Image (cartoon, rainbow, N blue to C red; front, side):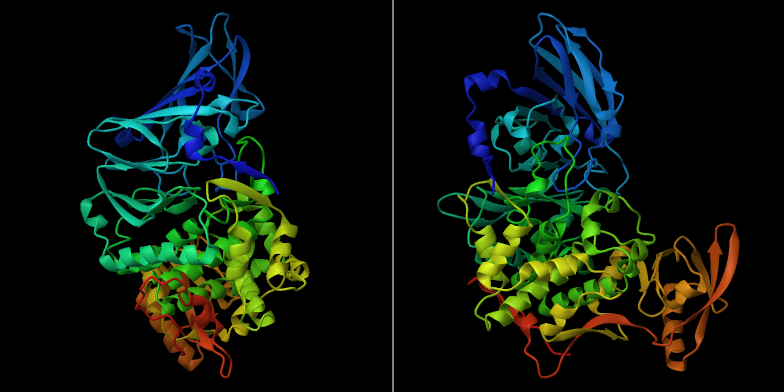
Amino acid sequence: MRRALFSALAACAVTAAAAADTIKLRVDLLTSSPLHLIHATMRIPASPGPLTLRYPKWLPGEHGPTGPIKNVAGMFVRANGSDIGWRRDPKDMFAFQVDVPAGASEIEVAFDLLAPAEAEGFSSSAFSTQKLALLSWNQVVLYPEGRKGNAITVEATLGLPGKWSVATALPIRSATSEVVAFAPVSLTTLIDSPVLTGQFMRTIVLDERPAGGKVVLDAAADGPAALAITPEQEAALRRLVAEADALFGTRHFGSYHFLVTLSDKVAHFGLEHHESSDDRVRERSFVDPDQRRYMAGLLPHEYVHSWNGKYRRPADLLPDDFDAPIDSSLLWVYEGLTQYLGWVLTGRSGLRTAEESLDDLARTTAELDATGGRAWRPLEDTAVAAQLLYETPDAWTLWRRSTDFYDEGTLIWLEADVKIRALTKGARSLDDFCKRFHGSGTGRPEVATYGFRDVVAALDAVAPFDWAAFLEERIHRRGTRAPTAGIEAAGWRLGYASKRSPLLVGRDEVLETVDVRYSIGLLLDKDGVIVDVVPDSSAWKAGAAPGMKVIGVEQRRYTKNVMRDLIRWSGETSSTIRLLLENGDFFREISVEAIHGERYPALERIAGTPDVLGSILAPRSKTPYNSDAAPKRR
């Protein structure tokens, strides 16, 4: 095991010698953010002779070479007051070669970042509006080749539109209404510490310890109405912090900031950092019940990453060299375990009710059960190929497979949790594994790497078993069905109901989809365009494919209500439904069977068995919680 400290406080204590070797970075949001163009300048210490500058390529948390190099424009390099030019490496688009002239002790680099307006993708997609911005430092910095991130010191300054507020985990040295100067930190810490800024912001302290260290929610929105977080939501977020403390037993940060961007004009995703998280959601995610339910698991997932992913990290995912390719084969631990623990903490905290937690698990399981790509592609390959799968469109997901190490990882770790409980007759659970695996350390920001055998050893210390065989079989196997053994051992099974749960209704409303995958095999967008088709379903066999558009249902113009009504009626009479499809410049009619009528995933209790899911979701902290702790039978 290798440990690496990168405490922000320690990084501030630079010596005079180190200060002389510090990159001075200035980023201007003063007038450029509304124009979707960010200006950056930096003064980089240099000696006369050849120098290669690198743009960060492999980004922590994004698990791929996603540095937005194509959005760099207007780049100039100067020394001794003169333009000295630059040359891009013809075999490496992220490397720039310059010749530092005699007598120069530094170079000045200036460039613009062309911020996309498209709200699709991850951090290199839309990140600013006229009222807010989320700055990812990796997008606006160059660094000398051949040095690790922890060995490079950066002193950053941020220019802001007047009266904008700022939130970040970075230590602030000084601030005015228009300029914020940050204390010097390592390049690794800088890239791990994004900045949220905006005109309309709200800060809520969720937890503050007497000895120091806070957990804070910082939210920025395009308008003030979106910041109306209810007392009940605040209480649930405070319980999230308490439940995480109970789960892991200790923290590995000085303070933590949930940086929540509320806008319909930015990309929507979550990205983990050690002492903060970049959480970008729809503008009304706190005030609209459907959107609240849809995003309920995001903050717990990213918070868990501070322990699982940032403190404990696969050795081949150590992000101190932003140029080196990664081995992402253990993402079913990094992301899969985090997804499971996030689901657990979402339920324990009350961010979701117990019923909503069950409905979410049913949805996850049913989608995996419909994934025909498992027949040819094992789970581990979805982790190894993550850098490809993150970039794929939704079309053909069920046959190609996607980043299934998240949700299938959830089912694997649920099964491990239930197995530990069975082996120890209820005396231990995966909570004990978390305390052992994630709970040691100094309590400061640090990294403790691991490999597969370390995971196995920690599980074996909690409950002796052949965990290596257990895990290897599940990540390497191929098959046609989702791994539901854990759910069934927990006293439940995947079933289907004729009506959508409120969680599924809300999800369809937020995503503007018509999900009839479990009746005829189609997932449609708001216009009737086929997003995906379930392999070997009735629609698949009839010749439907992603990209085609449903324009007619039984000689009627397509609407989502007409579609659902006819599926329900056809299921009751065991008949087929004729669909008129638009396929480019052509039309075709197909017939699909709907022998089951409307079908939507729902978990069902197995009679005569203990309700282990209820035990897993029961709160652990002493923080008051009056909601429904145990799942109801249905």
